[in-house]
Image (cartoon, rainbow, N blue to C red):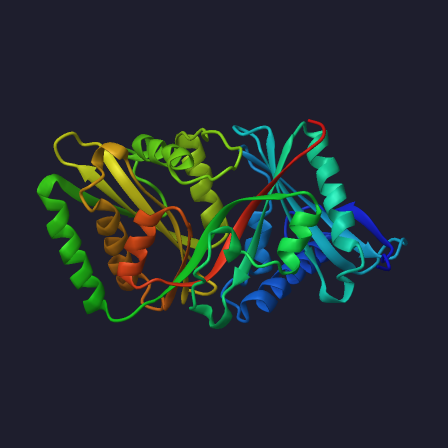
Amino acid sequence: MTQMPVSIEPIAVPDSLDAPGAEDFVAVAELLNAQLREFWGNDDFYGPPQAQLAGRRSTETRRREMLAARAGTEPGGTIVGVALVNLPLTDNLHTGYVNVVVAPSARRQGVGTQLYAAAEELAVSHNRRMLMAETEHLLPGGSVQPESGTESRIPQDAAAAFAAGLGFRLELVDRISRLELGSAAAGIAVLQQAEAAAGAGYELEFWSGACPEDLVEAYAQLRQKMSTDAPMGGLDLAEEAWDEARVREAEGLARDMDAEVLVSAARHVATGELAGHTVLEVFRNNPAVVYQDDTLVLEGHRGNRLGMLLKAANLVRLREVVPEALRVYTWNAEENRYMLSINEQLGFRAIGYSGEWQRELSAG
């Protein structure tokens, strides 16, 4: 393999898209969007540079860095690849996350390997001993599920081969599913069935954007519990630390990225406890596309069909609040049969799989 000569350098997040040096950030944003368009075959995951600007800023809970590969060794070369590095700052301080993207014209020339090496060096300099990465793989035709075991759902394509070649181990497989939103009547029928199953012991709370002050402490505990109750496979992750400040940080980030966040929570009538929640995200630049985020029911409240109730209720509300919404994407661990069953009953269909990988570093 002939190695393309490149220079690796950090790209700063500018104050605005009009600030000096912002053209490099925009070039990275366009590279990331081009890769997503190439993979998905559409613009469902397109991120406007302005939204990416907000999403790539560091916060109190996460340090975010960008390393760009420029063609040639002279200053000002064309950006042909990027490594995004995320480092948690409040928990899981032994970990980091990396995503390497290379332009088609620069692939299989060692650019990705050089970017990864620079990302690993950065992680080690911040005393991280474990790096994590994700690969995604679409099914042929977008609907046929393989019958083989979990690991075989990840094909040995270029993305998986690159991760494995760097020494990453596949630790968890998530199913990527999509729901084509149909008539409101069908959603209401499912909701009514879920309400009947849950009974009168629970009532639903809804909010958009900011969690009500009287619920935010309980909601933070649900978010924290999500970090331990969701299947983790062999990933070396500890419980996250959530409080009101972290909830507000996440809400502020969504606002800055021009996203609408719809939350449905179930309150236990007898105790007032929040028993579970589910989250949908819609970006205003493309309201046809919706992303299903966390869904959690606390252990003591399981067996009451609350997972179905929460998701069905939020989907009904989605149709009311965002009538332009056409489809919903979600990711669920293959071993999470309970949630997959709910999704299947709601009409979600598998379109692919993602692999979650990790690599232990030699120092940290």
